[in-house]
Every structure is written in structure tokens, then in C-alpha cells.
Image 1 (cartoon, one colour):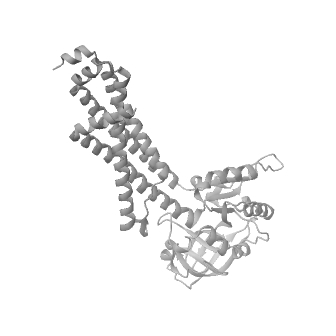
Image 2: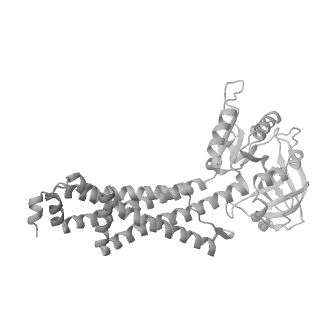
Length: 414
């Protein structure tokens, strides 16, 4: 086997130009794929982080049926105090969970004493919310960020602040219906203005959970949802499956599930964009396969036709067809390995350069988001494996042709 590798390497060295051009094509394919995977993966992870760390969390737990009627923010589908305590105990004992935050979501009428509009509110415990969605404070574009929110204060969306001409420190009135349909109103002070993460049409504000309970006349510590933050995002689906086993199996008196659990993928439309990015990555990998396959097949077919006399000579002196086959396959293998090694080296250098320079972009109202391209060892090994395997596959047909060549006809070839 060593002799075959040595002869194959000498053959590639004899045809330097062809070997160089083929290696360059393979290298360009590898570099294109690895750079695209690293940049697109960085973009996807950044946007997922922006969404989960500033609003949604990684996982949410609701009472069964809440999500299907979430647009109306129903208070009659809240988790009761006993259920919230059961969830809290379970989450505290899970080593993969970093933080969680119970919330009350409801709709209210917002008045500046001269005009009235509707607003959607998330009532939270400030400390627990900041631990669960640490980028929430970064969405405050006006007002104090420390501590997030205090009693008697409210964070309002930018759309309402501009439309209603409300400023920091102004007093406003919130009017909301509680579960039994009665109406209650309270005065609050505007602490800050929130950037709408879902675009300029966002109408979501934030207030203290104790204020919400008073406004809605809720005596118990119930919640509309419990948002969860994981220590490691890679554990999203294992933790989700574990929670499904522990909570999804709990039934009510009618034999129906009590809780429903959803990952951010179910709760955010950005998941569809993330899937498109993954699809584009797959398409780029297919293009790499095509480039390598065509390059290797082309160079090996040319090698066979140019070396017909040589093939006839080595066959005539007793070289078995299997060894001729192995020789040409080894040449394809060495071409694939050479192009892959160079491509990986250039890709790692390109990724290091991009991180050193600092690539930034704007996404909506968010300015100067910094990309940090990275590539995992798994992706590198997968791409390398694909390239080498396709290189061998591409050289197989020309190698079989060479192995089956009639020595007499080959020696007569001009």
C-alpha cells in the first residue's frame, strides 16, 4: 500500500499544473463552505440570542390551552399558585436551568388623561426577569436601566410613547378587566421607553408583578407563564424532553394534560428564518460536493486518457487490475486530502481575521451588532469527510476504466 501511495504522489507531482488547478478548485469549495457555515451560524446564534435573551427565554411553561388563545391574553388560563410552586420546585432542582421567571400577561387601556389606547403588558419580578432575559434592560432606549422596574412604575413601548406624547416621569392610568369582568384602574409613573423587538408595531410594556396583581385584583401568586433560561443552549431539547416527561404526564380530573411546554422555536417566527439558514447551508454543501466531484472526475479521466500507454505497460508486466484501480483511486484521494487541508487552513485563517477585524451589521433598530464567526470541530471533520469521500468516489469510474483496459490495445494506442 505504501508503494501505491508513493507512486500516486509522484504521478500527481509529474502533472503539477493539473494537480494545482484541481487542488485550487477543491480548496475554494472548502473555504466557501466553512466560511459560510461560520458566518451564517454566528448570525443565527446572535439573532436567537437577541430574541431569547431579551424577551422570550429558552423555554416557556403555560397552562394547557393558553398558547392557542395567547392573542387575547386570557386571565382564566393562568397557572394557579399551587401549579406555579410545583413548577418552581422542579426547575430549582434541575442543574441545567440557570434561571426562571413567572409572568402575568394581560391587556389594558393606557391613558395619558387626554387620549386612550390599548397596551399589552408583561408583569414580572425584576430580579428574576433580569436573570432569565438579561438583554431586556438593553431594550430600554430612554430612562433608567438599573433594577429594570420598581413598584408604581411602567416601561412603555416606543410606539405608544411617541403616539401619545408621553415622556419619562409622566403619570399615566392603566385600566384593566380582571377575571370576573370587573374594571379597575391605577396610576403609574413612566420609568422608561422600550424598543419594540418585533418591529415598530410593538405594543408591549413591562410592569412590576405585584402592581399587576393589585390592578387585576389577584390575591394568589398565579402566573400566565414561566419563562426559563438554560445554562447551555445545546441542552434545549434534552431539557424540553425532560420537562415533558415530568410535567406533561400530569393530568387533571378529566384526564387531560395540565401543562404545556414550548421551546423558543415554537414561540418565535424567527425559527423559520433559522431553518432557511440551515437549508442554505445544506445547499452550499451540495454545491461543494458538485465542485469536488466534477473536478476530480475531470482530472482523473484526463489522467487515464493521457496515460493509456503507461497503463498498458504496467498491465503487460503483470500488474493486477486491482492495483491499477487502487493507484488511480489513491491519486484522487490524495487530491482530495491536499485540497481539504489547504482549504481548512485558509478557512481558519479567514475566521481569525474576521474576528480580529470585527464584522458588524445593523438589524432594524439594533445598531452595531458584532458577528463572532466560529467553526466547530464537528463541522470541520464533516466537511473534510465529505470532500475526501467524494474525491474517492469521483476517481472511481476513471480508475475502473483504467483497470479494465486491454494491455495490447493500450500499448497500440497513439
